[in-house]
Image (cartoon, rainbow, N blue to C red; front, side, top):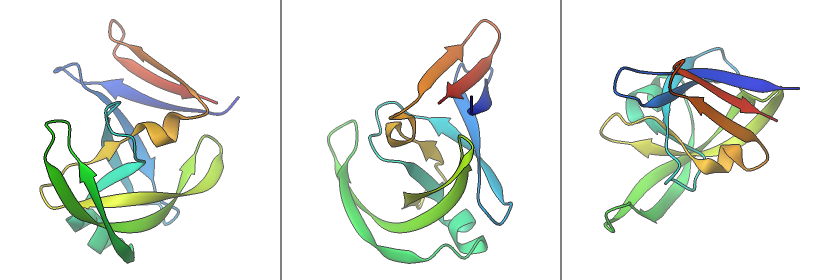
Length: 119
């Protein structure tokens, strides 16, 4: 059974680490209100030569519309190599959206401060 593990920080935010195929990794906040796959900071995108393939307009939780550059990344995810869309954040946000949990079980254990995603 393939799984990914993460942690819950002192602010009770759940994080998982995303690892690109080149080995670069980044801790991302789980955002169950974000229906996309990933948001990564521009500095990380540029440092890892992630190609921008277009842009995407989306509506944030508060109702404001934004347009962001979009790239494609290959990551190691639940025992497989997968390609996902990534939105580029200008403010340094790194988020994992529910697109990555579509076929999995998400378990957040606040008492033990652990996160598990099981396929």
